[in-house]
Image 1 (cartoon, one colour):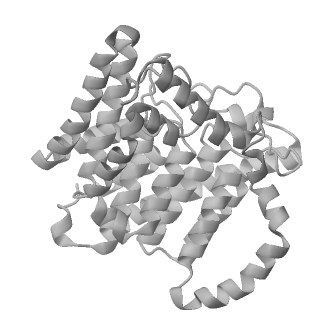
Image 2 (cartoon, rainbow, N blue to C red):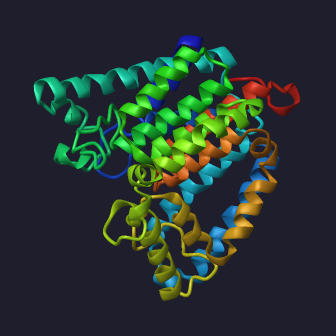
Length: 373
């Protein structure tokens, strides 16, 4: 594949994560999915990756067989296939990169400019022309179920209509840009490009992404400046603590019916109910949850049950070289998990590819990965 083709392929995959390149009523066929399939066929699978993924596959199959009479095989097969695809890429990308550092950095920067450019166009359309046409321009290809732009109104900013750019939801837009931000930092891009990406995240008006952005900025402060930053910020935090908790809507967590409650407390109740009703103490058959969760943290718990801590240890054991060496990778993964109820999809898998590849290229350990595609 030529350099121009690779640029185009990665950029197209990034900006069309919420779009299906082949419109149909059954399954989303995104550029990200096509890219992943190309990656697997081009690179192949090592025995190490196959063995790690096989253990997860066997576990998921055993859980399904134990609940076969109360589970839908078609739903299991679809979710199982996508989950195995996720773990194949997750384990593979720790040893293989698909771009050289400069190439990946430029592809991400180009995508970010397009994404934020469309963001700004939507804001201008709403604020200046009082129109919402651009929000539904891509409806024919989008996975969005929104029929009214009012769904995108901000709770914290006086009902201001939040931009979605090429995506289906403002918080997903912020999450994609956040992964791009971490990747650009790992790839040592110019500060100006990272500031532009931060500007795009701010424009998304996504409260949870603001929280992740705040953590990112704290992480970015050099350790020698920690005492000075603490002395400066702590008094402001104490004085404005009530505003801080209000803005990030922490007070909503235990208020039934609020967004915060729906993201954290409601899924917990639903997962416990799902496990108890189906006697699924070691996990529910994948793809057979009665409720669609807003974040993937509770989704993973429902699939692993009381073995959730062992699942975390398994992932950590075979990923510790990546997880320990770069706190931004953990931050990016947590962002994808808590702002996305579909972590085991080709689109989230592609974002994980970008995230981990950027770190591999940062450390540039020749023994840690094979040659780019």
